[in-house]
Structures are given as C-alpha cells and as structure tokens.
Figure 1 (cartoon, rainbow, N blue to C red):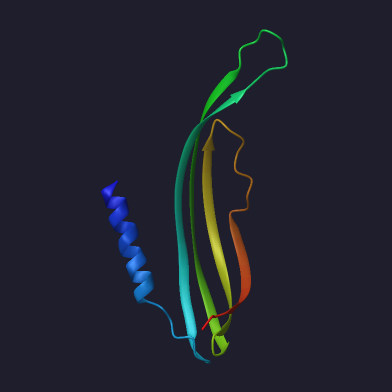
Figure 2: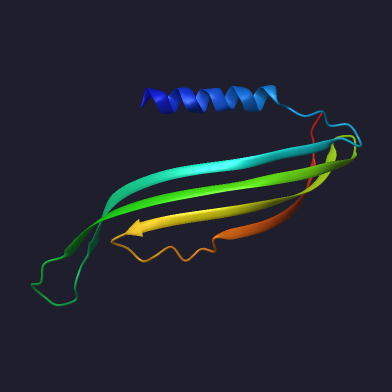
Length: 112
C-alpha cells in the first residue's frame, strides 16, 4: 500500500513541476495513464418462488494509456487532440463492451 502511495505522490509532484507556459505559440505534450481494480458481490434473484438467489463475486481490472498534444493559439487558449487505448477484463459478469480506443479534440481556455 505504501509503495502505491509514494508512486502517486511522485507522479503528482512531477506533474505539478512540469506545468507548461500558456503563451501564444507554445506547444503542450502530455499523456494519461490509468490503472484500476475493483471487486464486489452481485446477487441475482429468480422469479421462481422458493429458489435460492445466485451470488457472484465480481472482479474488474482495467488499463488505459494515451498521449495528448495541444498548440496555444493565443495566450491562455489552446487547441489540441488526444488518443487513448484502453483494455479491461471482468470476471463473472458481462464482458466490457466499450471500444478499446478513442480520439478526442478539445479547446481549452486557461483561467488567469
């Protein structure tokens, strides 16, 4: 548990130290990384009187990674794009039907 905490703390400090300048003409290259694990119990009840409910132990693991790029059109105003690849696995449940990748564009106004 403490290794995960120190890893998140280190990544947070690095991301704060790497803040980009927001003047016209600058470029910003970034990315995202996501790892998650969840588990739980699902109970399904039958409509047949007297039948016992079905109990499933549910586990989900997911991972995503992707780069992003933006260009500052004016001070504090950038236009960019990002790509993402994701993968997930669920046990004892319906499979993950989300697409394994995405593409996005954005316009962001920086607050002063």
